[in-house]
Image 1: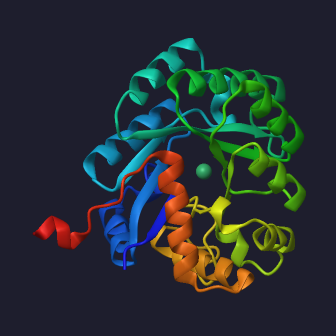
Image 2: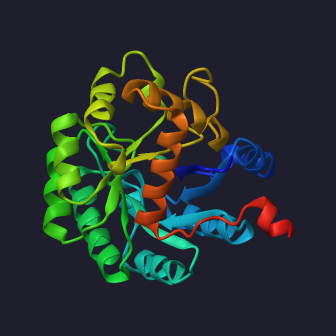
Length: 265
Ligand code: NI
């Protein structure tokens, strides 16, 4: 039963260097039919695209993460624009603001988020947003940019913010954090947000769901996130998986995957 999509993974990261092809194969066996692997720097955006080119059902996003924007300049963006011309690049990101860790100065983050929102608009790509402790500023900048499609990845706001994101035409992406008992705010978000607006993600190698908490995360673990969302909403997990996959395909313009059976015939 192929129906899960991991809408946000980082397969290009070094944590997967020793066993990447096994990780991708385990995902396939677990029913994950597509994976979006998301660049966070120019170097990792290039690697994300090269992995996407190698595997039919893997897609790439390119962009500079707020932690990495300090070194970015117009030359970086020119190179990202070239990468974005490839048909396997289906989104611009991850981009945004991280006022929790503040690894890059806030002023620089804001400037570069604005610049990358312009780029996404120019490239006509949906955006993948990273927002940590910067809800108001992120929403304000997205609204002002005119970008009308994207996802709030690893959603960390409350149900009121979720409603604002949906009203803007954006999706909410639910990570493995939802399987943690203490994630009460996220549980309420999942309860309130209709399945039409929810995506599922691992954000691997980070944030492994229970029962793998603390270990390296990987796309095959996404089933645990789907099951927890289903338990909260009181529906079958297959329905959650199907709806979230449909939403992901719609947002990123990903066609129905050819099944293994189709490929064999
Ligand atoms: Ni991420």
